[in-house]
Image (cartoon, rainbow, N blue to C red):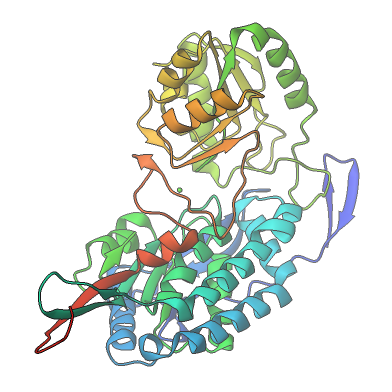
Length: 443
């Protein structure tokens, strides 16, 4: 299939046939009980990619039951960790063998850049699986030293059936971040991908089956938040129910503000917006019409609230959900564009005089997922990184992730951590075992 970007660049890529559109429950692809389907949309054009089986409460019940049986009676939680590791590693190998198809699925479903998906997101899924495969056989408790005549030790046991609800902005990355550690811990699960981006999750489920993950351990049920998502969140037989980091608020010291503003606008105007399969494109479409219109409404709020629109703010073309990179200056802390998560290509510039002022302004938000600091002064880097209320702080870099680096937010940006061993531990629970010691020569 030949595609074109802005009528200038020609490039060719074979768009994959959509192979999996049904619910994946107990090791099989099945229709929803209601027979309902919903459309997943290509944000490049607004056209329908495929019709997906729509899971509802009844389907979640069936999936949870399958996960419960797999946990209570199945082999997965009872396998030696090294056996789980072998299967997770095989799954990672299969993902790498299908990297182009998976990257294309996230591109047509989410509008993500194909080159980025192929080079970063999908290899990252395989890497995350291998990281937690390496930890699966290192789950153990410890021997305790009680003050009385007791022998005591702890066990680390899988928490049980887990419910995962993942967002649309990083469909593959968040799939791996939730699934890999919970599988390594020995849990079983029901996962609901975002209704905007179900395709890659269903393909991963197919590959999991091929890798040898037992039936019922991983169940993928696409559907909507108010039905399938609500059913997962409230289900009494789920033992644990369950992100974004775009640099949307930028605080610039007054001495360099004007120069920084000028260079930023130049960069934004040179930014290439277009078809995400085009390797020259730097920004693809927004995920769907609803999000596209939501971003435009925030841009209007910024104008009405008195912020200065430096560049952007308009639709690109007349087909698909493309937006110009948008930059506002003279933004005040109480403006909506400074307080809300926009989830779009909109940046709010704010000026500060002292470091203390910048810290206070940065913390004046109900969110706290990530922050970045750019400075040559080590003292400033240390002070600010310890003062900002966010779960990850990047110094002289941004968007620096790794399977071994814990990631999660403060305040309303969530609880718990993904990645790192901290993520593994949240799917485990500690059991203490105590027995008396009689006639021991020492405690």
